[in-house]
Image (cartoon, rainbow, N blue to C red):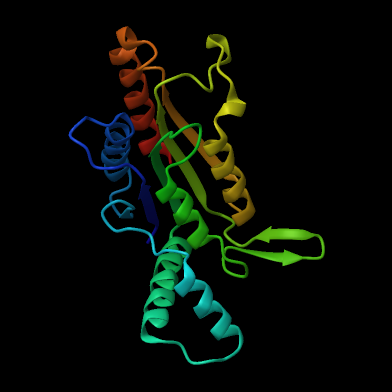
Length: 211
């Protein structure tokens, strides 16, 4: 069975989220087009990402030295492994987030830190790192108030460091089949809000059918 993992990195607010609305449209379209696939939703705000902290690093050092772990260290490493296994076990990935100050939300960055594990998602070789998650695909859905990817509207791709970072990280993992759906400009041009959302929702509908 094909597994689609949706990584949701948007806080829960009373204000309608453009990225979440578009993600919902994608999900509904995908379910209709792929009724036999399993969709797993990983909400990084409902269930926080296991931290990389003093406990984590102490546990890693003990594992290397073949020393006994405390119960807290065992529990934390177990959480890390569960999240990593879920990520590796998926066939397709959908990342959903708002842009924060030209980058990804901290929760999504922390999720990437948990999945960027040598000999699990990539490996080092004499010729450089090689991805281990080949034959998978990813879609990045991101909303921003301004314009960053529309050269005709003076967009500046280099200012979107988050999307670039996610793209490069997935390439490190071996995921080269990547698509992006950017919802941009609704805050800069509020009079175009309905048009921008209509376009994004139509794109999400199409991605759901073909992804």
